[in-house]
Length: 381
Image 1 (tube, rainbow, N blue to C red):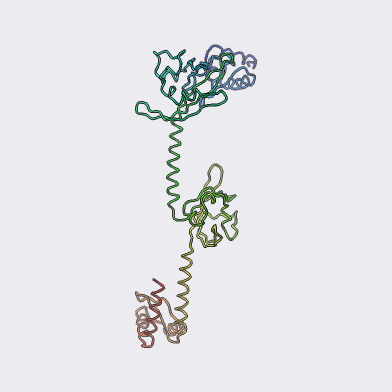
Image 2: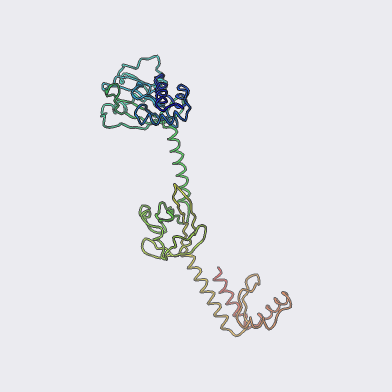
C-alpha cells in the first residue's frame, strides 16, 4: 500500500509537470493513482495549502499553490477578461476575449484601451466607469448585445485585482448571462399569465401559509370583497378573517364550507369557501376561493318568506286546496287536501289527475286557486 506522504509527492509531481490546472482524472493518469485516492488526498493537500482548487460549473480543477501564472487561471474561464494597468494600458487579454473580439492579427497588449475599438469593452459607459473607478468599488452593468442577428445578454464588471508580486491592476470582465436572462424572461411571462388568470377570477382568491395563516397573495376580487388595499392584505392573517374560530388541524381541502367573514370596515358577511393545498419550497400553502353569498342568502330568505305566506293562506282555508304548476304537477296542498287524498286513494295516475281536476272545479275554490297560482308564479320568477 502506498503511504500517504508518497501519494502526496506523486500528486504534487503530476501537477508540477503542467503549467495549467488539472482535473482528478488527469492527475490520476499522470500519477498512476486511482481517482478515489487522488480525490481524498487532494482534499488533504488543499487543507495543507499545497494545492488550490478551481470550480468551473460542476468541474473541479487543481493546481500547485503559487505555481500557476495568472494568465493560465484567466484562460480557463469562459468569461471575457481584459487586464489593464492604472493608465488603462492593456496588459493581458484571455483566450475567450481574444476569440470573441476576433483581433488575433491586431496588437492589443501594450495599447491604451481608449485607442482600441473592442466592442462593449470600449463603450462610453465602460470608459466613464473607468474614470470614476476605485479599487474598493465594483462597477456593474447588464446590457443587451446583438451580433450576427443574435441577441445575447452580458454582465459587465470593472474590479481591482492584485497579481504579479502584489501589483494592482484593473480587470474588465464580461460574463455571458443569456441563459439566465432567458430563464428570467420565461419566469416573468409565466408569472404574468398566472397573474392575469388569478386576477380575472370573480371569486376572491387568497393564498396563505397553511400552518401560520400568513397571507402571501390575493387577487383583485379579494381586494374588492374585503376592502383592504393589496399591501394591507398581505399584513393580515387568513384565520383572522373568520368570525368563528377555525380548526387549524382540520383538513378542508376540496370541501365546500359556509362561514362568516369580516370586511375591513367590520361588516360581517356570509361566504362560501373552497380550499386546496400545495407545497412550495418545503412550505405547505393553501388557496382559498371565497365567494360572497350575501345576495344568495337574501334571495333564499325572500323565497322562504313567500313560501310561508302561501302555505299560511292555503292552510287557513277549510276547503281542499292544491296548487299546480304550468305542467299540471302538484307543488303544494293544504291539510284538508291531504286528508281527502288519504281517504280517497286513486286507482291509478289517470284517475288521480281526474279527481284533482274535478275537485278543483268547485266554483268557490277557483278564485282562491287563481290568487294562489299568481302568488306562486311571482315568487318563482
